[in-house]
Image (tube, rainbow, N blue to C red; front, side, top):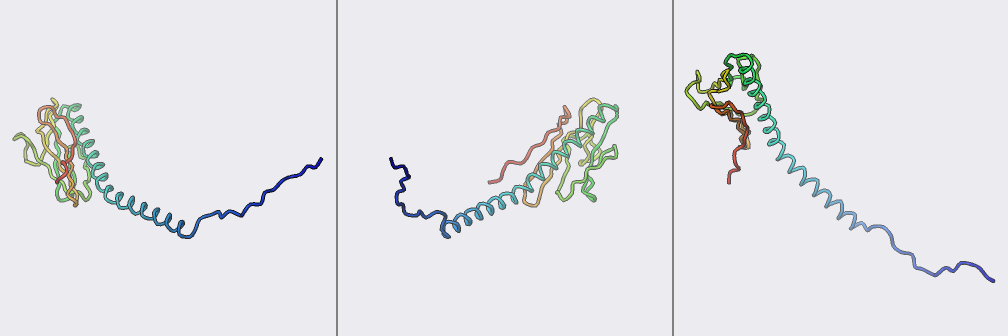
Length: 158
């Protein structure tokens, strides 16, 4: 009995990619990377502004807690010369390169740009606005009745 292997004659198959296919794939990857880069560069300032808003909210909440715990009124003002929020506790928050404004809701404050927290939890109320050159604006609102501090952003402009 004969044993052996039977090999069919086959033509060699072309394997691999052509230069055109490789070039096309590289171009698609390059366009995708450029699209991500453009999206990222537009989104970074918005995220940085949101982070600064969170820092302002934390700073203001800390000042309110100090007024409640010490039984003494605590104030917050915008130092336009140094672009910082200055509190009566001596802790300042540098606002870096953001355009900022502070306004109050009531007549109880010594000035229109001073927000005061009272030991009973109330405040003069106010609005702290932060904006960047692109026009995006974030706000920190202090309710005058409850002293509640909340952050929000302007709705997009059409």
